[in-house]
Image 1 (cartoon, rainbow, N blue to C red):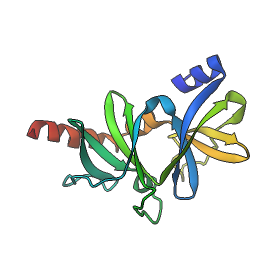
Image 2 (image 1 turned 180 degrees about the vertical axis):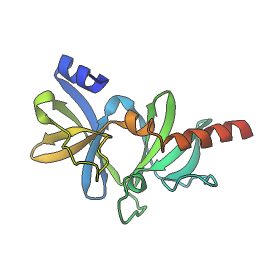
Image 3 (image 1 turned 60 degrees about the vertical axis):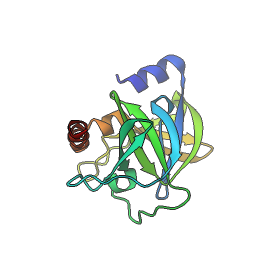
Image 4 (image 1 turned 120 degrees about the vertical axis):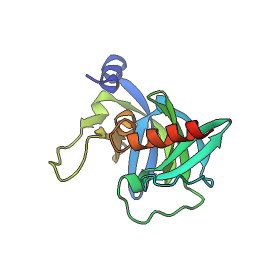
Length: 167
């Protein structure tokens, strides 16, 4: 049983930060969120994956910035006044996630969360922990630690290490 399942089972409720990517609403564990900031320019890193926009200096900490819209293969990646960066702290690292907007903080009880659907091998759903419902609205619950710890995201760790060595 993962940490999310244990906390939901013990306490019965859990808080999530909801955010939009394209037309869909996603949610992540609020305890992983450090801060939310407007999207600003980033310093690009050569030969990085396309979803890695670059890095920013956040009060002396070099923070890699990933665009979740690109990571999830969404069309029409547009940066506007609603585009924000969610600064998260997971797996001992600080990372920025570019999203279309932040919606709300919601509390979900275990009866509002359904298991992630099985899509078969054509769709990668390993980062989806379930589907939450609030007032007839569906939220795609994401396991942000599993996403950041995935193999393709480890490329970010090597780019981050190269930056540390260059400093």
